[in-house]
Amino acid sequence: MLAGTTLLAGAAQAQEVIFAHGANPGNPRYVAAEAWAEQFAACAGDGWSVNHAPSSTMGDDSEMLTSATAGIIQVSANSQGAMSQIVPEIGLLGLPFLFADLPTAWEVLDGDVGAMIDERAQNAGLKVLGFWDNGIRHITHTSKHVATPDELSGMQIRTPPDQMTVDIFEALGAAPAPWPGPSFPARCSRACSTGRRNPLTNIHSAKLHEITPYVTLTGHKYESTPVVAGLAWWSGLDEATQACALEATKGAGKVQREMSLSADTELRPQMEAEGAQFMEADRDSYVAATQPVYDAYAERFPELVPALREAAGL
Image (tube, rainbow, N blue to C red; front, side, top):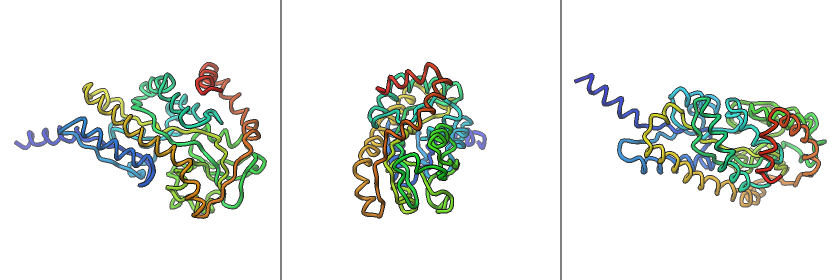
């Protein structure tokens, strides 16, 4: 009787999906994860439940990717930087000034480029369910704007452990300081760095403009939010349940992308009312300063970089 009960408990547990990510309440990623949980459970039917684990409760992005491949969690709305350590090709999405706007980036990700990244990810034990958005990056500073790269010279700027981001800021003359943890003030005081780089929605939801109120609209880099599942878990699903996971990712992603897009226009006046000061960057000087980054990655990926530039309309 006890053995039978144990088997039944194991079967029930196998129907739980842990959906983990690093965002806090209010962030579009958090909202989308809630929507994913609701849509997947409704589609998959009785016996399925989703445990939403936000705010890095299951570790940082790199740890969540490892946990997904190990079957500890099933799905993660992760980060481009952490994913690039496993699938280097995804890092190319962050080439400086690659995408003119968010819809252009989404069109590229929803096509052959996204399929290629999924193929590479599966070789590493992960299944890409889709791509949510993580915004176009701008620079915030504690005490000044950085309209030109010259004003970044020697500036310590907090970055993720993402080689593309590090390469960009080294080309701009800054001193990147990779930091593995989530981007919010409790983990890093004013003394940690004088500058940050984030999309407006992340700046606002994490209240970073209270620490670095000078916002220079550089638009220097795009980042996606790859939604990934452990390949072993994914492969064990029937086709109908796989379809539910894909549809939930697409449906929740539509909400998340729309929130990200609207944030670029709606958040500025709100942040200004809260003390943030905005300035447009001299885009041409930034583009010229980061050209060596393109040259280096084109040498490393001689076919992918030109193809990606063409897909982005450059």
